[in-house]
Amino acid sequence: MPPAKKRPRRYDSAKTRAAVLAQFGHVADAVRDLTPEQLARPTHLGEWTVADLAGHVAWIADSLARGLDRPPAAEGRLLPHDWPFTTVALAGKISDAARETLTGAPVPELYERAGARLTEALDRYGDDHVLDLWIGPMRLGDFLVTRTVELVVHTDDLNRAAGLGIPFDRQALAACTRLLADALAVKAPGGAVEVRIPPFAVVQCVEGPRHTRGTPPNVVETDPLTWIRLATGRTQWAAELDEAHVSASGERADLKDLLPLMA
Image (cartoon, rainbow, N blue to C red; front, side):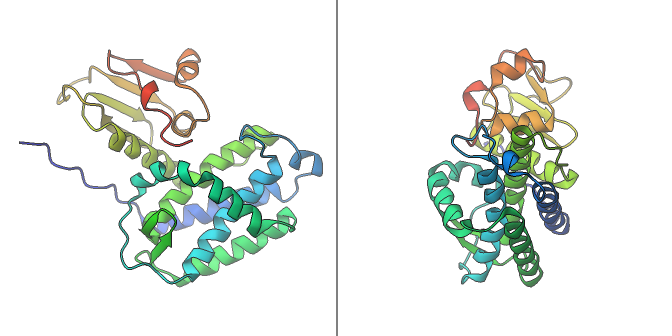
């Protein structure tokens, strides 16, 4: 008899909405006073400067508000853990859309405008409103969980590129960590390896003997930020093992061929 299909993780709507707005607010506060020299610094994201990256974060909020104002789709089919696998093919399209939308305005103005639009839009629409996205139809409540990934990942990108200390909203960091952990379990279903990302997530993955009791024979453990960087291609499995940011025990506890989940 095949194992029962796992139910998708449920996220608290009010907490997710608050987390998205809080994380966007943290970034807005930090980038508002960046100097021209800081904005011109390179990032580890290809040719993007800090200004490009900051503008992209503003676009994340602005595009969500614009999407809510478009006619809704009939039914949301995509779930949060499906989303990471849809992003690579759209990278160029997203970059072009962000550049077209945001060209010509200074960074503080971009954030003020986008933040106001996003707050107003979220006040008007409930979780069951279905967004007609490039990747397919998705409920607003589910899509907001994916926004925590975008905001947390790019907060980390900005911190590393510009030497900033932008804080991470705890709920945003938790949702981001859990979504990416669930995506790993979808990509490599099974119960042979237990992946622990305290204090936010534990998932089982990889085909093989299923662990039922006691200490699992194959265990991977890391912190949330290292996990997020691995899952999004910001760092490499071998490097994090060497730095002892990841512990992996057991013959199946090697995830290098499964990462990144999105890049």
